[in-house]
Each structure stands twice: as C-alpha cells, then as structure tokens.
Image (cartoon, one colour):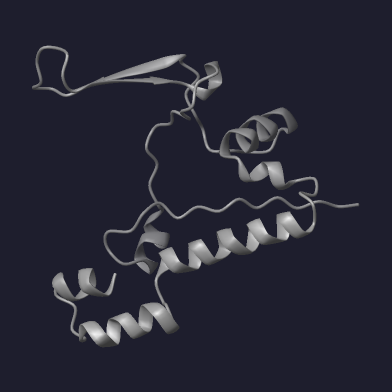
Length: 137
C-alpha cells in the first residue's frame, strides 16, 4: 500500500507511508479488515451466538424481506448473461445464476451514495453501506 500510494503521486516518502500502514493505519480498508477480525473473533469466542448468520448478505436480504425490514433491492430473475459488446466467438460472455434461484450471485441494479454522503468522501469512493438492526425486548 505504501509503494502504491507513493507511486501514484503521494507526497510522503515510502518509509513514512510504510510506517503509517504498519503502525497506525488510517485507510478504510484497514478499518474494514480490523472490523472483520473483531467480529470473527467475537463470534468464535461466543460460540457463534444467534444473529451472526446475518453477516451473510443473502441471509440478511432474505430474512429482512420475511420480516418486513427494508433491504437493498435486488432482482429476482433466475440468471443474467453479460456480454462484451465487441467480443466474438463466445468470448467475453459471462453467466451469473442468481442467489434468488439457488446461485451464488446477488443481482442488483447499481446504486450510488447520496449527494450528501458523496460530499464527505474522497473521489472516487465506493458505495458506503452498513446494516443497522435494532431490537426491543
């Protein structure tokens, strides 16, 4: 990451960037990986308590729909065929079987961050998402 940052025009030295990435990372990917590790460790230590299956995107969408919780929209068509516009002879063609039909892919139309969220992020930024579910006892 340090070399990539420096190579793409970063203003600090490779050594400084390496030290930052190693000792005090400040990038979204490191935060995300740290969160994944903490969640995985907690799940392991607590012997996978109820609710952790919601980490699976497809399970979350299905369960949310069943319970009337708003979830990101997804297509229910059984499969998609995606073709490159200029490839010939069967090249550049991809087949995706939808999770809604037992496949591995959740097929959705592309959605984007709102203008307000975009104003808070560097360009280009990925779609910023998180799942929030609360419960009353």
